[in-house]
Amino acid sequence: MHEMALCESLLQAMEEAAVANAFTRVRRVRLEVGRFAGVEVEALRFGFDVVTRGSLADGAELLVLERPGQGWCFDCGDTVELTARLDPCPRCGGERLAPNGGTEMTIKDLEVE
Image (cartoon, rainbow, N blue to C red; front, side):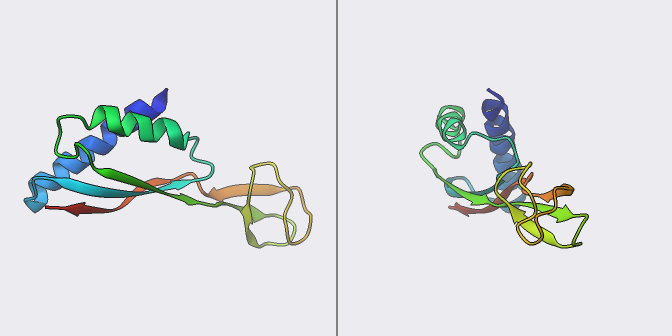
């Protein structure tokens, strides 16, 4: 379950931000996760609760903002939203697409004290 490792990295980023910005508690985390990031959101929520116990984010609310996948179509030259990596282009039906978005996982913001 790589979601646990992701949560450990998330906690480390919050701890570093706490030192840099002089806060002691995280109340809410808004996390953007792309459709193609390979993250199981429910496993991420579970891992977040486990990893943050006893930390500055103990009891913090995790809001996951799911972002769509994107691909660039070689046939029509447009960047389009994709539901799955192997979907055809929704504009022209072309099947030659290069995924170019939706693989990210980013901390959007933190609500802190």
